[in-house]
Image (cartoon, rainbow, N blue to C red):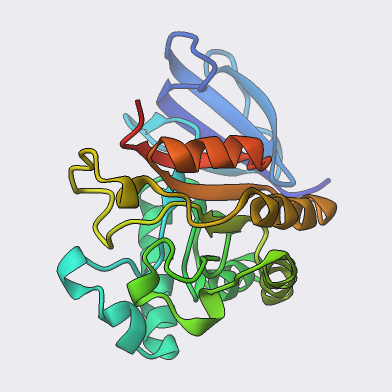
Length: 251
């Protein structure tokens, strides 16, 4: 018969844009929503597990479209280099559990050494957490995005190196690529950009970006790019990047 669950709620927001509905019942079978109906005249199915939520509201899970496990404040950026991996994983596991408890059921982690391991552990049922799309570590050019705090494994120059880096990320468990396309300061999301041409230069050549996106697309993965300023945004557009992140300092 399959595992059937019944959720009864005072208020339902279904996420379609329709008005909220009162006194509703959601029937789930084998982890798939089978029926959504009014509680009026509803009879509980046999052998079902019933969850009566009282006056609580049910809504679709939230999505965090850009986050980083083991993120640190700007005045503690050194911890991104000095903190042992085991500590990062343990903290990341706690962060994943808190996200799920807060109603976030899916997230994109766009730069974190521990995110592939967390995704694997969540998928295998070892720890609670949202469904994850993860990039693993950044891919950056020498002297490029946040280069001052990037580790050697995150740096790739030239078309062959960026292709190799994409393959490495896939082997490590990434299911999206994250590349830095703009040069700038470590606090480039918060600073005023003004007219300084250095801060708006692209970090990669068009040929390098096209090589990176081509390799990702061959493997059916999207590429997300950190872009500050017009030059980086235009480079992303010309280089077939799928998602542009931040877009600060643009006309």
